[in-house]
Image 1 (cartoon, rainbow, N blue to C red):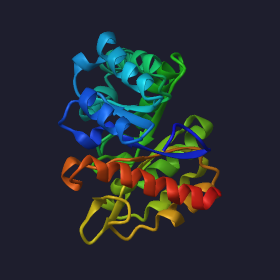
Image 2 (image 1 turned 135 degrees about the vertical axis):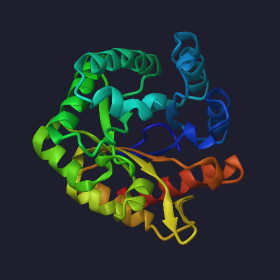
Image 3 (image 1 turned 120 degrees about the vertical axis):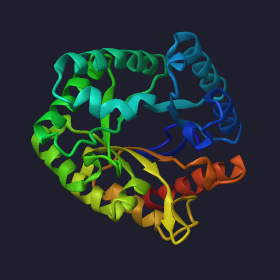
Length: 269
């Protein structure tokens, strides 16, 4: 479970421990041998440089890395970014510079965007909002990735396919397996439709017991899923992301990350 050993690698989201504080969850997971992380910022004060520096210090102490960042403001995306009120959108983008500065301190490269909930927002507005935010991110040397979220129009594969076609190489995606299942898809449908535009994975198993389970606790063929990713040239992290109610002891998370890495090693040899 070491940091970035191969083209595809495993890791975990600090959000698995929510509402426990990130500065407490992160070292617990590091001590269990996990080396690659997504960090979820849960409030404004956690973007202060002193706090971000504390997280970076924990990562450095354990030889670990932050791959991606998830924002607490995602619930405001629709109102702020897609309403057509450009001054509001610009203020929202300006606020995101705080995230991008934090990413630079952490060494993270991907920013996770939930996106649009409004059924009345046309594709042109949704895609423009993504591009404007990504333009800002790129000025900091990082990228915005659109996640498929069930409660958003951007959770629908057909809209993401249109986004990929319209934006070409500028489109980048996070594939969340539980969100795909909640939306009625097999996660591999996203893999084959979006191909190497997928840069990052939020991974969990699913089955009769739920759509957000530890690897091996459901019906998802982890090896088959990694084979699908490999077949389209995916390169990035397969990050275990669960809700706190979906596991007991933190050791279950480290075992889950090992299961993902075992599947990766099986596919890549």
